[in-house]
Image (tube, rainbow over all chains, first blue to last red; front, side):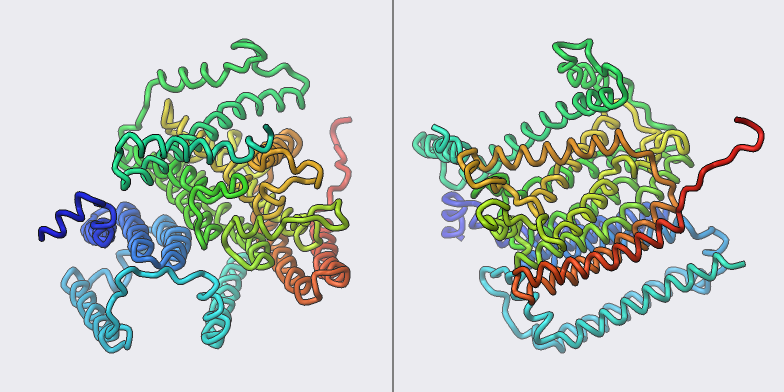
Length: 181
Length: 397
């Protein structure tokens, strides 16, 4: 404890650098909880957006710059906007008629815990769980990520590309049918 | 003397930090002091540019329309920004009673912060990057997403139909034009082999035949990508002819309808700083960043070149505003999805072919063909579809 105090006085930044990640983590948890609790749908969406931002900052604080920026670009730029558009374009009566509306809070909590259990199962089953966190997380250079994507994982990469193209064409087809009476 | 100017900004900073250290300031605070000074300088430069542009834009528009423009406050009306600032600060800050107070207050803040943060990754001169990021270009676009959220917050929280409609238009436009924008930026990043802005500028150094600079804009694929990026930048910055989120004649002022006083001024400021930031990225990606345009002009400091290029690109944006009428919303969307996006894919493919054909004359011709063919085909289709015929009037001369 004494040694920690001394290093705190000499160079507080280096002493505390491992703890900075706690700030965005706290924001992430609080905003996610507030999003679930919010009664107003649009406010809930905005709080969820804040939690996306906080998650991105957590990635960046852990040294995963590329993942962090990609998280911001995809989740804040696209997913959050999609959620907001869906809320604005859906009529309230359509919401009331949806089969999910009758499940109530108990159903929601059940599904949430089932999802949590499944995710935890996958996390502990993965080989990454055995590895200890590196003392100073070395940022993987973007070029290395690019080489891995187009080298080792190229099949997955192309499969995802095909999936997204199919989704895009599907969206265009749905949009086209509206125009023809 | 002139060689001193090149390194003057960094030398001054290092001298000041050494002075602080000699006064016994703890070493761990120095990076913070250094960052604060850089932030202060950036804010000073860009807010001065914003103030200057707000009056010069009106001057240029006035010149284009054969008027005088602002000429009452100070010499040539140059103190107009001061008068505008005082007016904005002293105006009443109106918030609608039915507005969502918190979100209404936060929207201008969320708008301005990312616009200022993206300034960190631009290489202002040789070795003058405030934040050297490996994924700098990605950082720029990731923070750009904040603008969309802010526009939505402003539109929805105002509880006004024009605000919501304007925000939806603005978001639809930004999402549509972000795609060609990012695709054309990727072209430059791909050829340079890096997402780091300074590496992209380094890749554009040198001259062909000792005269033509090796900027990406002087290759067929680079020229196409530059034009696509320019159009996308106009749309992202809400500049005319893509300013229909705020089309006064249709939806009052869009998401800004319920904003007044200094909150409105913050939106205005964010828009202009965002415009300069995207001009800076355009200069970095395609116009050689801080590189001099001709070999014998190398003596001019690199940061002066960068600022001059930014100002020139911003001037052309004002020029476009004075020249072109506003687009219609369906034309706007069709243009983004049916013309710009396929063209950006073509530029992408052309750049890859240019690289694999050896980056020489053969690559030049091949990439010209790959960019030119879809341009002629798509352009021809668009010209036929939106052909303007002579209008005949039945009841009047």
